[in-house]
Image (cartoon, rainbow, N blue to C red; front, top):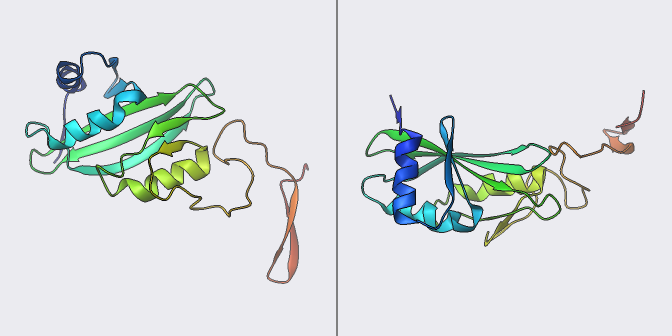
Length: 165
C-alpha cells in the first residue's frame, strides 16, 4: 500500500530547494505559489529522494474566491504519494504552468480542467476543449456558470434544456 509522504516533510524539501517560494501545509496537502510550480514539479520528479515519477490525477476546485488545481503524485520506487495544490486568484484569466513536459499524463487532465473550469495551462502543447464542443460558452463546472436555455435536435426530436421550470 502506498504511504502518504508527510506534507511537512515535502514542504521542507521544496523550501530548501526553492527558498523564495511560498509553501504552506493545509491538512494533507502542500500549497504553493503557481509561479514556481513548473520548476518544483521537475524537482519532485527528478530528485532521487522523492522520485515523484507518476502523476495520478489532476483536479480543480472552484472556491469562488479562487480556483485551485490539485495534483496527486506518486513515487513507484519509494511507494509514497503526495498532494500539491496551486491557486489562481484571477478568476477572469486563471493561469497555471503546464506540467505536460514533466508528466505526459497531464495532457488530457489539463485539457479537462481547461474545458470545464477555464484554467489556462501556460505552455500546454494542445490546449483545447476536451468534453464540450468548440462553440460552447463558458466553463460548466465553475460556480459562476449560468446554464442558458437552449434547444438541440437529438435523434429527430427537439430537446430543450436549461429552461426555468
